[in-house]
Structure formats: structure tokens, C-alpha cells
Length: 375
Image (cartoon, rainbow, N blue to C red; front, side, top):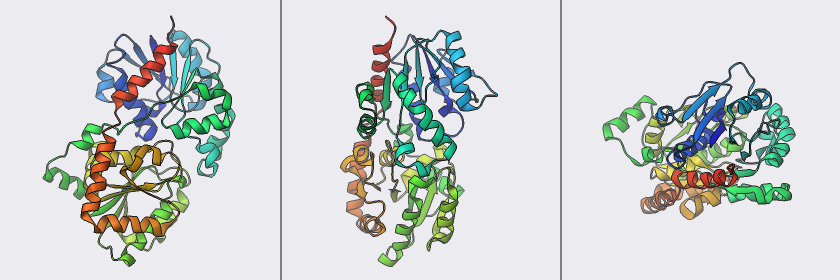
């Protein structure tokens, strides 16, 4: 087979979707040894060495196009020219005018319906216009959690039989598990001006990540007798940053809050490992890569009990109501003041994260491809 991908998530910084797409691709290479992979994009791609070295992986960049216009106008012609056997849409939408091959579609969440206020209106309108048609066109719809599968089934009952759940895994999980020397770890912390101990959050700063409530809970810790902890935020800025910036500025603990922006993966692994606790109070997630990565790094996790996070994290994290700042603060206090409890939660998390792997995810993806392959 010749399999083409919407490779836009592999352009630039890796957020959750980019991590998923790269993890699946790397996992597929040894499983589909005779297949060719065409990575299509209107922007230049930033590929890992594994993908760059494999002669079966071909990049096709058509610069000068707006991303969504490219998907609907330029890409169908490209797929026809390449004579692909299967197309994998990795970013919610499919090229609706293409009819040359079966198509698989990733749907990571339904934020556009559940939390429309957390999206830019132009993207919201476009997705609401084109997503239903893309879902109908897809031969298989891939989600990362049973939670999202059920949401799709509730909104579009006729499509339920097409939905397949294929979870992700900690991105480059070996890196999180392998610790650098003490000197190298200290060098990374000095680079960002961090002091032990600290509480860590990783994710794009956008409204549904619930940053304001997280800062409120953090500010309560001093009143509870928990002092001397920095709050470290890692991740790029997303849409709707204004209120988040104000929350960062006006937080009672603002002097001890550090926002590092985007951090390279080699440094991020150290920040996960060296954190005393990982805090993730998102209001809505289709999976939850950052808390799973923190678990793989051996760090205990306090996370929201909303959406798919309970499914993803199981009983290996302390789950809380993300809108109840007193409950959140008490969970943090309990972990930080009871070393045995904190180590117990961290160990449960490490074992739980080990149950997820890109090998398993790629195997399930390959099964989807083979079921649709031309006979």
C-alpha cells in the first residue's frame, strides 16, 4: 500500500496531536514493512531522525497554501497523482473532494461542541461546517478514548459502528524513564532558573486548561502551611491568552510562578522527572498526554476528574473537581506533606503509564489500515 497522511501536525512545535501522529508513524514503520508513507503538508515538516532515515517515508510539501484551503483544493489533486491506496486525516478534517481511496479520520475531542468558547471563532465555524461531512466520508474514525467514542456515538448514532478507539502513549517514553546524571539535571534546572521543589504543569495555555483555578489552588497552599514551592508552567500560548495572562499577573503567588513557554523535549523530560508533583486541571480532554508523561517520569499526578482523564489515568492519579480550588489545594497539600503517600501515587503512575505503548497503538492502527486495504 501507499499510505498518505495529513502531516500538518508534524510542522513546528509538537503539541499533543503532533506527538500522537509522530508516535503512530514511528510505530508503524516496523509493522508495515512493504508500505510506502507519503507525508503531505502545505508547510515544511520537522521530522525525527527515524522518519528522515527511512527510505519509504516521502515528504510532499506544497507551500503557499492556507492550510484548510490546501486540504480541500490542492491535496485531492496530489492524492490522485500519487495513486495512494489509503489516506489518514490526522487533524479532524478530510479532503472532501477526494474519491481516489478510502480515508481514515482522527477525531481527538469534540471541543467545538462542548467548549466552543475556548476556540477562535473562525476555526469553530470551519470545523462545525466540515466535521460532520468528514465523519460521514471516513471509512473509519479513530479516537484516543472510549469517552470520545461515546460522544461521537451520542451526536451521530449512525456513525457509531465506524469508530475505533486507539489510545496514545507517553511521547518518546524511553526518554522520560531514563534519568540523566545529577549534574546534567541540575544544568537544565539552572537554564530555566528553577529551584527544588516545584509543582509542574505542561500544556498549551488556553481557556479549557483551567489555568486560573490552578493558580487559585496554588495560592491557597501557603495558608495551609505548604511553602517554598515554585509553580512552573510549560507550554506555548494558545488562543484566548488575555485572561490567562491577567490570572498569572494577579495571582497572590505570582512572584513564585514561572511560565517557561515551549521547552525542547530533552529538557522537558528532566522537568517532568525533577518535579515534586504534576498538576493538570483541564476542563476537557480527549486523552491526556502530559499527565501520562509525568507518570512515565515517576512523578505523582493530581488531575481533573473531567472528560476522558479518569479513563486515561485510572486510579494511578489523585483525581479532583477542577473547579473546587479548596479540594485541589487539599489534594496537593496531602501529597506534599506525606512522603510515603506521594511515593505510592508516583509508583502506581509509573506502572500505569507502562501499560501504554506506541507499539500497541501502531498495531491497532495497522489493523485498521489492513481492513481497508485494496484486495
